[in-house]
Amino acid sequence: MNKLLIILSVIISLLLAGCNMNQQKGGSSNGETVTLTHSLGTINVLKNPQRVVVLDYSTLENLDYLGIKPVAIPKSNLPSHLRKYGDDPSIVDVGSITEVNLEKINEASPDLIIMGGRIVDFYDQLSAIAPVLYPQITDADDYMAAFEKNLNDLALLYDKQDEVESALESVNKRIDEVREITSASEAKALILLHNRGRFSAYGSGSRFGMVFDVLGVHEAVEGLEAHRHGNPVSSEFVQKANPDILFIVDRSMVVEKAVLDKAEVENKLVQQTNAAKNSNIFYLSPEMWYLVGGGITSINIMIDEVAQAFK
Image 1 (cartoon, rainbow, N blue to C red):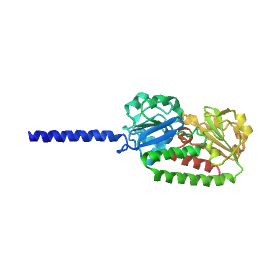
Image 2 (image 1 turned 90 degrees about the horizontal axis):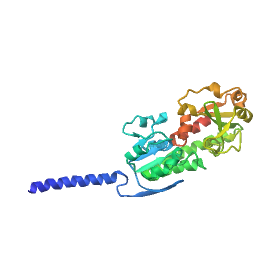
Image 3 (image 1 turned 120 degrees about the vertical axis):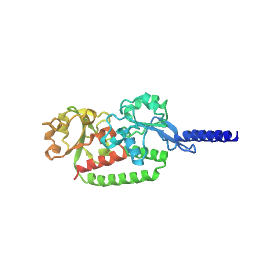
Image 4 (image 1 turned 90 degrees about the vertical axis):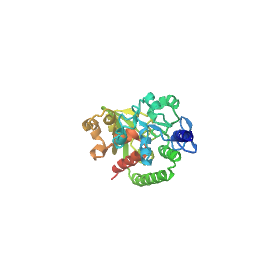
Protein backbone atom coordinates (compact mmCIF):
# COMPACT_ATOMS: atom_id res chain seq x y z
CA MET A 1 0.00 0.00 0.00
CA ASN A 2 2.79 2.40 0.97
CA LYS A 3 4.59 1.52 -2.26
CA LEU A 4 1.46 2.38 -4.26
CA LEU A 5 1.14 5.73 -2.48
CA ILE A 6 4.76 6.55 -3.28
CA ILE A 7 4.25 5.76 -6.97
CA LEU A 8 1.11 7.89 -7.10
CA SER A 9 2.93 10.73 -5.36
CA VAL A 10 5.72 10.64 -7.95
CA ILE A 11 3.23 10.63 -10.84
CA ILE A 12 1.34 13.61 -9.39
CA SER A 13 4.60 15.50 -8.88
CA LEU A 14 5.60 14.91 -12.50
CA LEU A 15 2.20 16.04 -13.75
CA LEU A 16 2.37 19.22 -11.68
CA ALA A 17 5.87 19.91 -12.96
CA GLY A 18 4.64 19.48 -16.53
CA CYS A 19 1.77 21.89 -15.95
CA ASN A 20 4.16 24.41 -14.47
CA MET A 21 6.43 24.13 -17.52
CA ASN A 22 3.49 24.66 -19.84
CA GLN A 23 2.49 27.78 -17.93
CA GLN A 24 6.02 29.15 -18.24
CA LYS A 25 6.42 28.27 -21.92
CA GLY A 26 4.66 31.40 -23.06
CA GLY A 27 7.05 33.87 -21.48
CA SER A 28 8.62 35.11 -18.27
CA SER A 29 8.60 32.55 -15.46
CA ASN A 30 7.61 35.21 -12.92
CA GLY A 31 4.71 36.49 -15.01
CA GLU A 32 6.38 39.86 -15.70
CA THR A 33 4.67 41.75 -18.51
CA VAL A 34 5.72 44.49 -20.90
CA THR A 35 3.49 47.25 -22.24
CA LEU A 36 4.22 48.22 -25.83
CA THR A 37 2.54 50.99 -27.81
CA HIS A 38 2.31 51.14 -31.59
CA SER A 39 0.34 53.15 -34.14
CA LEU A 40 -2.67 50.82 -33.97
CA GLY A 41 -2.90 50.34 -30.22
CA THR A 42 -1.28 49.19 -26.99
CA ILE A 43 -0.56 45.63 -25.88
CA ASN A 44 0.45 43.91 -22.67
CA VAL A 45 2.52 40.78 -23.25
CA LEU A 46 4.63 38.47 -21.09
CA LYS A 47 8.36 39.12 -21.30
CA ASN A 48 10.38 36.67 -23.37
CA PRO A 49 7.49 35.26 -25.40
CA GLN A 50 8.55 31.95 -26.90
CA ARG A 51 5.88 31.42 -29.54
CA VAL A 52 6.13 34.42 -31.83
CA VAL A 53 4.54 34.62 -35.27
CA VAL A 54 6.47 37.11 -37.41
CA LEU A 55 4.69 38.54 -40.45
CA ASP A 56 7.23 41.26 -41.23
CA TYR A 57 10.68 40.65 -42.69
CA SER A 58 12.34 43.65 -41.05
CA THR A 59 11.31 42.22 -37.68
CA LEU A 60 12.53 38.78 -38.73
CA GLU A 61 15.93 40.36 -39.42
CA ASN A 62 15.95 41.99 -36.00
CA LEU A 63 14.95 38.80 -34.19
CA ASP A 64 17.59 36.91 -36.16
CA TYR A 65 20.19 39.39 -34.94
CA LEU A 66 18.98 38.88 -31.36
CA GLY A 67 18.93 35.09 -31.66
CA ILE A 68 15.14 34.69 -31.37
CA LYS A 69 13.52 32.00 -33.51
CA PRO A 70 9.87 32.44 -34.61
CA VAL A 71 7.32 29.62 -34.70
CA ALA A 72 5.72 30.81 -37.95
CA ILE A 73 6.51 33.18 -40.83
CA PRO A 74 5.24 33.87 -44.37
CA LYS A 75 7.68 31.89 -46.53
CA SER A 76 6.49 33.12 -49.92
CA ASN A 77 9.05 35.55 -51.44
CA LEU A 78 11.32 35.15 -48.44
CA PRO A 79 14.51 37.23 -48.94
CA SER A 80 17.57 35.13 -49.73
CA HIS A 81 19.48 36.19 -46.61
CA LEU A 82 16.63 34.83 -44.46
CA ARG A 83 16.33 31.58 -46.41
CA LYS A 84 17.36 29.43 -43.43
CA TYR A 85 13.95 30.15 -41.89
CA GLY A 86 12.20 29.05 -45.05
CA ASP A 87 14.18 25.81 -45.07
CA ASP A 88 13.40 25.07 -41.41
CA PRO A 89 10.52 22.54 -41.29
CA SER A 90 9.82 23.37 -37.64
CA ILE A 91 8.74 26.89 -38.65
CA VAL A 92 5.18 27.02 -39.97
CA ASP A 93 4.55 28.67 -43.34
CA VAL A 94 1.62 31.09 -43.02
CA GLY A 95 1.48 32.47 -46.57
CA SER A 96 2.91 35.75 -47.79
CA ILE A 97 3.51 39.23 -46.38
CA THR A 98 0.44 40.45 -48.26
CA GLU A 99 -1.94 37.57 -47.56
CA VAL A 100 -1.61 35.44 -44.44
CA ASN A 101 -3.31 32.18 -43.46
CA LEU A 102 -5.24 32.99 -40.29
CA GLU A 103 -6.06 29.35 -39.60
CA LYS A 104 -2.41 28.33 -39.60
CA ILE A 105 -1.49 31.30 -37.43
CA ASN A 106 -4.14 30.26 -34.92
CA GLU A 107 -2.89 26.66 -34.95
CA ALA A 108 0.61 27.92 -34.09
CA SER A 109 -0.77 29.08 -30.68
CA PRO A 110 1.26 32.30 -30.63
CA ASP A 111 2.01 34.34 -27.51
CA LEU A 112 2.67 37.33 -29.77
CA ILE A 113 2.09 38.25 -33.41
CA ILE A 114 4.30 40.86 -35.07
CA MET A 115 2.79 42.08 -38.33
CA GLY A 116 3.87 44.34 -41.19
CA GLY A 117 2.31 47.27 -43.02
CA ARG A 118 1.11 45.23 -45.97
CA ILE A 119 -1.50 43.41 -43.83
CA VAL A 120 -2.88 46.23 -41.70
CA ASP A 121 -6.39 45.16 -42.73
CA PHE A 122 -5.83 41.88 -40.86
CA TYR A 123 -5.14 43.64 -37.55
CA ASP A 124 -8.50 42.94 -35.88
CA GLN A 125 -8.55 39.30 -36.98
CA LEU A 126 -4.99 38.76 -35.80
CA SER A 127 -5.74 40.49 -32.49
CA ALA A 128 -8.47 37.92 -31.85
CA ILE A 129 -5.75 35.24 -31.88
CA ALA A 130 -3.01 36.88 -29.79
CA PRO A 131 -1.58 40.31 -28.89
CA VAL A 132 -0.39 42.06 -32.07
CA LEU A 133 2.57 44.41 -32.38
CA TYR A 134 2.86 46.61 -35.47
CA PRO A 135 6.45 47.86 -35.93
CA GLN A 136 5.82 50.57 -38.51
CA ILE A 137 8.82 51.54 -40.63
CA THR A 138 8.32 52.20 -44.37
CA ASP A 139 5.29 54.44 -43.79
CA ALA A 140 6.65 56.14 -40.68
CA ASP A 141 6.96 59.93 -40.59
CA ASP A 142 10.44 59.63 -39.06
CA TYR A 143 12.29 56.63 -40.46
CA MET A 144 15.13 56.47 -37.94
CA ALA A 145 12.88 57.10 -34.95
CA ALA A 146 10.71 54.19 -36.08
CA PHE A 147 13.75 51.99 -36.74
CA GLU A 148 15.14 52.65 -33.28
CA LYS A 149 11.76 52.16 -31.59
CA ASN A 150 11.28 48.80 -33.28
CA LEU A 151 14.62 47.56 -31.99
CA ASN A 152 14.12 49.04 -28.54
CA ASP A 153 10.72 47.35 -28.23
CA LEU A 154 12.37 43.99 -28.90
CA ALA A 155 15.17 44.84 -26.47
CA LEU A 156 12.61 45.50 -23.74
CA LEU A 157 10.67 42.37 -24.61
CA TYR A 158 13.68 40.04 -24.56
CA ASP A 159 16.13 41.85 -22.24
CA LYS A 160 18.52 42.50 -25.12
CA GLN A 161 19.37 46.13 -24.38
CA ASP A 162 23.12 45.69 -24.77
CA GLU A 163 22.82 44.03 -28.17
CA VAL A 164 20.42 46.66 -29.46
CA GLU A 165 22.49 49.54 -28.13
CA SER A 166 25.54 48.17 -29.94
CA ALA A 167 23.59 47.76 -33.20
CA LEU A 168 22.16 51.28 -33.06
CA GLU A 169 25.54 52.80 -32.26
CA SER A 170 27.06 51.09 -35.30
CA VAL A 171 24.24 52.16 -37.64
CA ASN A 172 24.25 55.78 -36.49
CA LYS A 173 28.01 55.97 -36.86
CA ARG A 174 27.75 54.72 -40.44
CA ILE A 175 24.96 57.22 -41.20
CA ASP A 176 27.11 60.09 -39.93
CA GLU A 177 29.97 58.95 -42.17
CA VAL A 178 27.75 58.86 -45.26
CA ARG A 179 26.09 62.20 -44.47
CA GLU A 180 29.50 63.81 -44.32
CA ILE A 181 30.12 62.60 -47.88
CA THR A 182 26.69 63.52 -49.29
CA SER A 183 26.71 66.98 -47.71
CA ALA A 184 29.96 67.75 -49.51
CA SER A 185 28.49 66.70 -52.86
CA GLU A 186 26.34 68.79 -55.18
CA ALA A 187 24.94 65.70 -56.91
CA LYS A 188 21.16 65.40 -57.00
CA ALA A 189 19.46 62.02 -57.07
CA LEU A 190 16.16 60.49 -58.11
CA ILE A 191 14.93 57.12 -56.87
CA LEU A 192 12.57 55.08 -59.04
CA LEU A 193 10.62 51.89 -58.51
CA HIS A 194 10.53 49.98 -61.79
CA ASN A 195 7.75 47.49 -62.50
CA ARG A 196 7.27 45.90 -65.93
CA GLY A 197 8.29 48.97 -67.92
CA ARG A 198 6.62 51.52 -65.64
CA PHE A 199 8.24 53.94 -63.20
CA SER A 200 7.18 55.42 -59.86
CA ALA A 201 9.24 58.19 -58.27
CA TYR A 202 9.85 58.55 -54.54
CA GLY A 203 11.04 61.57 -52.60
CA SER A 204 11.51 62.82 -49.07
CA GLY A 205 9.09 61.30 -46.55
CA SER A 206 8.28 58.30 -48.74
CA ARG A 207 9.02 54.59 -48.25
CA PHE A 208 12.44 55.14 -49.87
CA GLY A 209 12.83 58.62 -48.44
CA MET A 210 15.64 57.60 -46.11
CA VAL A 211 17.98 58.27 -49.05
CA PHE A 212 17.22 61.96 -48.60
CA ASP A 213 15.95 62.26 -45.02
CA VAL A 214 18.51 60.04 -43.29
CA LEU A 215 21.52 59.97 -45.60
CA GLY A 216 21.30 63.59 -46.72
CA VAL A 217 21.30 63.05 -50.48
CA HIS A 218 20.00 66.06 -52.44
CA GLU A 219 16.75 65.56 -54.35
CA ALA A 220 16.62 66.01 -58.12
CA VAL A 221 12.87 66.63 -57.81
CA GLU A 222 11.50 68.23 -54.65
CA GLY A 223 7.91 68.13 -53.46
CA LEU A 224 6.98 64.62 -54.59
CA GLU A 225 3.99 63.33 -52.64
CA ALA A 226 4.76 60.56 -50.18
CA HIS A 227 2.42 57.89 -51.55
CA ARG A 228 3.14 54.31 -50.48
CA HIS A 229 3.12 53.26 -54.13
CA GLY A 230 5.03 56.32 -55.28
CA ASN A 231 4.23 58.87 -57.96
CA PRO A 232 3.70 57.31 -61.40
CA VAL A 233 6.06 59.06 -63.80
CA SER A 234 7.08 58.77 -67.44
CA SER A 235 10.49 58.47 -69.04
CA GLU A 236 10.01 62.09 -70.14
CA PHE A 237 9.71 63.05 -66.47
CA VAL A 238 13.01 61.32 -65.71
CA GLN A 239 14.67 63.03 -68.67
CA LYS A 240 13.42 66.45 -67.56
CA ALA A 241 14.42 65.84 -63.93
CA ASN A 242 17.91 65.07 -65.24
CA PRO A 243 19.30 63.54 -62.03
CA ASP A 244 23.04 63.29 -61.49
CA ILE A 245 22.43 59.96 -59.76
CA LEU A 246 19.61 57.55 -60.54
CA PHE A 247 18.68 54.82 -58.07
CA ILE A 248 16.52 51.97 -59.38
CA VAL A 249 14.55 49.44 -57.31
CA ASP A 250 13.19 46.73 -59.60
CA ARG A 251 9.98 45.32 -58.11
CA SER A 252 9.51 42.73 -60.85
CA MET A 253 12.67 40.91 -59.78
CA VAL A 254 11.34 39.99 -56.34
CA VAL A 255 7.59 39.84 -56.87
CA GLU A 256 7.51 38.10 -60.25
CA LYS A 257 11.05 36.66 -60.27
CA ALA A 258 11.58 38.45 -63.59
CA VAL A 259 15.01 38.95 -65.12
CA LEU A 260 16.10 42.58 -65.03
CA ASP A 261 15.89 44.16 -68.48
CA LYS A 262 18.33 47.07 -68.36
CA ALA A 263 17.47 48.09 -71.91
CA GLU A 264 13.87 48.61 -70.81
CA VAL A 265 14.91 50.67 -67.78
CA GLU A 266 17.69 52.64 -69.46
CA ASN A 267 15.67 53.64 -72.52
CA LYS A 268 16.58 56.43 -74.95
CA LEU A 269 15.11 59.19 -72.78
CA VAL A 270 16.76 57.93 -69.59
CA GLN A 271 20.07 57.74 -71.45
CA GLN A 272 19.91 61.52 -71.92
CA THR A 273 20.24 62.18 -68.17
CA ASN A 274 23.47 63.16 -66.46
CA ALA A 275 23.20 59.96 -64.45
CA ALA A 276 23.34 57.81 -67.58
CA LYS A 277 26.01 59.90 -69.29
CA ASN A 278 28.30 59.61 -66.26
CA SER A 279 27.54 55.94 -65.48
CA ASN A 280 25.72 56.89 -62.31
CA ILE A 281 22.71 54.58 -62.55
CA PHE A 282 22.65 52.27 -59.54
CA TYR A 283 20.42 49.24 -59.13
CA LEU A 284 19.52 48.80 -55.47
CA SER A 285 18.74 45.42 -53.94
CA PRO A 286 14.96 44.97 -54.30
CA GLU A 287 14.94 42.43 -51.48
CA MET A 288 16.39 44.97 -49.07
CA TRP A 289 14.53 48.06 -50.27
CA TYR A 290 11.18 46.61 -51.33
CA LEU A 291 10.64 43.41 -49.32
CA VAL A 292 12.35 44.32 -46.05
CA GLY A 293 13.20 48.00 -45.86
CA GLY A 294 14.14 48.53 -42.26
CA GLY A 295 15.73 45.66 -40.32
CA ILE A 296 19.20 45.64 -38.81
CA THR A 297 20.65 43.74 -41.79
CA SER A 298 18.85 45.57 -44.56
CA ILE A 299 19.51 49.07 -43.25
CA ASN A 300 23.26 48.45 -43.26
CA ILE A 301 23.13 47.16 -46.84
CA MET A 302 20.90 50.07 -47.89
CA ILE A 303 23.32 52.60 -46.43
CA ASP A 304 26.26 50.95 -48.21
CA GLU A 305 24.41 50.86 -51.54
CA VAL A 306 23.69 54.60 -51.41
CA ALA A 307 27.25 55.36 -50.31
CA GLN A 308 28.54 53.47 -53.35
CA ALA A 309 27.12 56.21 -55.59
CA PHE A 310 29.44 58.79 -54.04
CA LYS A 311 32.74 56.98 -54.46
